[in-house]
Length: 340
Image 1 (tube, rainbow, N blue to C red):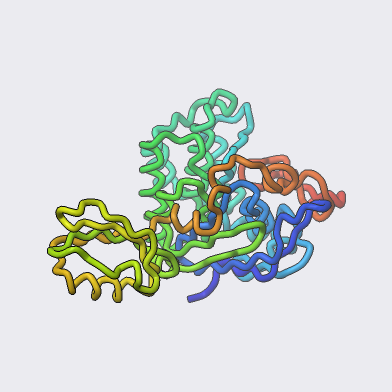
Image 2: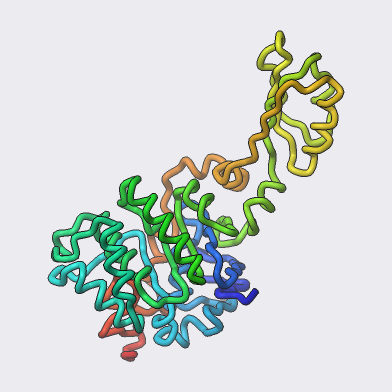
């Protein structure tokens, strides 16, 4: 399978702050790829490099086989971007904004546009200044998914959407994948990523710490087993890979323990010696996989380089745009003074 995105050893600093410190990332064509990490981990900086809004200090990046900085104008006709905080032209209606973005991207499926407007319960006749945050997100989502874009870069796209609209979003992303589109999805809603993603990459301090399918990642961490046996199960705590053994009910012989991914078979074989009445296995959730790398950091609402510097406000080697919904604009300009 070909790669829609290839990133190798990417570095980006803002003064003394290292937003990206050797990031590696591969996204296969036609997959939904979850891009995970808390605030300040480098997710938004990475996406801005892929959009050509920031120039990396070192390392290599390719998007759809092209250089995202040198070939930004061409690439922006082949990709769509939805940020987590959409800003619209205040005097354009939502429908006009969708159509303008579609022209910038090179095409629009009008039947799909109408369908998405209805499914997201969006009034396209309202002016941009009259929209709530959730409705601004809907405009950007409809514009992206109704376009001819091959690649969707989604950075917290459902921020501000209510739970019903999040379900609609999950459905339409599944449809985009079925249509052959590639999706890079950065989201803090782990259940959403768990449902949608074929593969995930977890990043920490600007580096990829783990990448693979959920099945592969689960194999690397612990599974929780709750079991009831005919006779008291002894010796479980002596098995390699078994942790946190607890007796839940001595009368029924019910116990719970965690076991390393590669040691599940051995633990189950041991349990058969005592006669298994019932056994429930809980594979690790995506949240537990994240906690393996971050622990208490996930609970801290900290602010890092993505919020205070990695947004393209403070160093050279960046590109600015007047139109902020997807990085396009009729008056696109570079900080070196040249218009593109």
